[in-house]
Image (cartoon, rainbow, N blue to C red):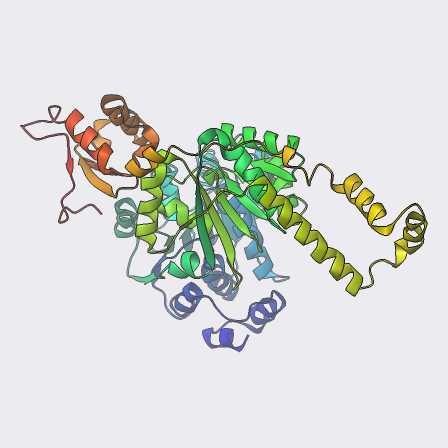
Length: 533
């Protein structure tokens, strides 16, 4: 706790941190606190999800506002890409404030507009919100940012991925030039750099390496599996774990709904969140998950953004992530606070190139595993049962049922009675009939797709009028390459970059060879010295 005293925090803040169990600052906090507490500079922090960013900007923000002369206008805006992240940030800031005279309020779509309007009009100090809801209140003259002192943009690259870049500009243009701006982002694409150049004054740039979030504390594995067999593989992995508490990521809302339905039908303790679920239901599900009442949460990337739950044992990629950044975001949710975690990815035969590419980029081994057989699972469950019984005996956790045990033992031999009890209790669980057959992947297809990926230059950018989805569909329609195999699309104004396996690269180059302008092909191998940032 003494490590926080050197930054100039008040005793009230130090007491709150002690009660919350803070022992030492994270890397991003260590570097942010001196800048935000002891200077007036703007700041850009490049750091992954789960690195302690909320405290990094929240604690100095609270200290500064409490020291300033009080007034009715909003002092600080914190812009978040999702409702979940906004709620989480708002709650954490409130916990840092404690009983002190400073108000934090969070606004987001799905909450009562009238309630938000009434609270804003009553006067608040720190406003946390999502872009859409903030713009709604700006358009209706409920919000006025002309006098704010601080502007915080959290998860800036995710804002970009979700199409909020124009909203960010619209909101920033309503704020005064003399405000202090703080920006956090896991990556620094061109669009984010432009925000820095256009809206920030003298600033400090902080970069925190992310390798400890992915490699040191998270054991990473993958299974090669046919799409139709993915649910069966998930059942087996849930059964083989002694204690499972984790998130299963799917690509689409429909996938989330279907998988959740299958799990519930099988009797698993699972629930889901995605963009079409009402905010009230979403909050109930997240609350149940955080309290451990729900052990398996099925989610899309966007719905889970900002969801920070302690103690997760697993992250399972039911659908392989679209890019390396999404992969690191997902698996960074486990293996925190010094504990180890497990990340498992389901990989179809035509996706082997993608998992190999991710492995190469994060410079970490992702080990391929053999699918556990039904008998493997049953044998392990029996061993787990023996261990639990041994622990119960050691802890004398049998006294309540001793009389009944003596009565049962009068019925027959001890082994016969115990066998009957096991059959009554575990007959279905210890039966191989519980599991369906899993087909072997097409090994020929696997071998064809284990080659390295190629980066391609595509002479089509945002100025063409296409968005990312439309461009991927266009490339797929012309070349015959599956949309899911076109990876890591980075779309700039006049051109784009994609990653595909070598075999698909040949198809794309050949298909678009005569479709370019001025004698140049529309698609070509990206040159190493081409500026693509």
